[in-house]
Length: 224
Ligand code: AMP
Image (cartoon, rainbow, N blue to C red):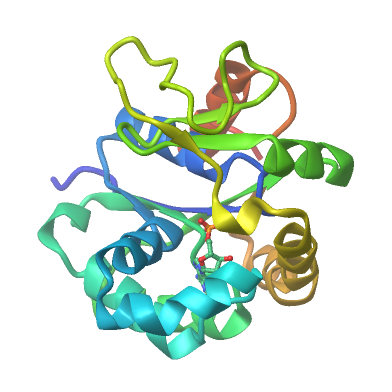
C-alpha cells in the first residue's frame, strides 16, 4: 500500500512564519518544501529571464503575474520528489492560482490538500517583517531582537559563516504594499478552502517549537 500523501499548503500573511514552519514541517514529514518566493529570488539573483520578469513586481511588494507563478508551481509539483507530498509556502496566493493548483492535483491524480492557515495579529506581523534578517549561507531566518543579529553580521548558526541581509521587500513601503495585496488577493483563499472543508486554522503566535507542534498535528489531521 502506498504511504499516505502529505499535500500541504501553508497560508498566512507575509511574516506569519510560513517559511520557518514550512522548513520544519518538510523535515518532519520527509517531503519537499516548495517556496515560490525562494524560487523567484533565486531566479533574480542568477539574472535569468524569469528573474528579470519578476524583479520589479517583487521589489514593489506586488504579486508576480499568475501565469508565471502557475507555470513554476506546475513544473515543480511534477518532479518525482513530490510523489508523496509537498509543503507549499507562498503558493497559491490568488483564487486563480488555487484553481490552477486544483487542476494540477486532478491531472496528477493526487489526494486532497490540507490547507493550514497560520494566524498572526497585524502588529506582530509588522514587527516581524521590519526586523527580519536572512542568512545568505544557510537561508536561516532571524530577527534584530536576537543578540548579534543585524545587516552585515555573521550568521548566528554555529555551522554557518554566512552574512545576514535584509530582503529588499522588507522595507516599510513594500511591507505596506504586501499586506494590502495579502488582504485583497490572498485572504479570499481562506473562504475558498473553508468552503471545500480543507482549511485548518493554527495560531502562529508564541514559541516557534510550539507552533511547529500545532502545525504538525494539523498536517497529520489530528485537529479539527
Ligand atoms: P514570499 O517569499 O513568499 O514572501 O514572496 C516574495 C515575493 O515573491 C512576493 O511579494 C511576490 O512578489 C513574489 N511571489 C511569491 N510567490 C508568489 C505567488 N504565489 N504569486 C505571485 N507572486 C509571488
